[in-house]
Length: 211
Image (cartoon, rainbow, N blue to C red; front, top):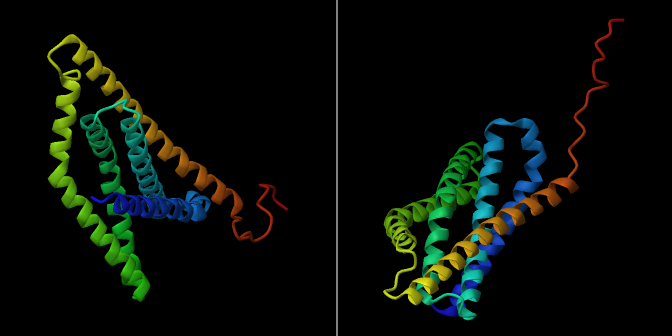
């Protein structure tokens, strides 16, 4: 894939993750009190946002480590494969909940915008599921083989270098995942903290005393 296209896709994914976190933050406090299905959708949006941020950070960190010659191209691919098998389950589960909710909303409102959102969510879910079925087992096998062999290589020096590269790969993936979660949490907290709930009170709360 051309470098310019990779950068464009990265920017789009990062922007979508920001929007998802912002949208979740706008409804976070309200769904916390409402509970039920709306709370599930809020958490699904948060998971989707964190997954998107984590994937974007993983690409940057892996590319930086490769540019600094901390890891080889083989280990760069391994970092992406490890991140993929850790991120994709959350993407599929949260995406399914979001898709179901968009179907229900489109059925209720019959508005073009909601139907369009439902259509896009359906396409994205099918696309992600198809790729997971096609790529997950290969990525999982590659990760198991790499970590199971301890870095590979025939000589002790090669094994040592390979082992250090695996440590770097593991650290990169962990940092990417934690950074994605933290970014989503910060955005949600900032948006939710600045969004006041409407006044729905109907007088003072009961005191338990009889008149």
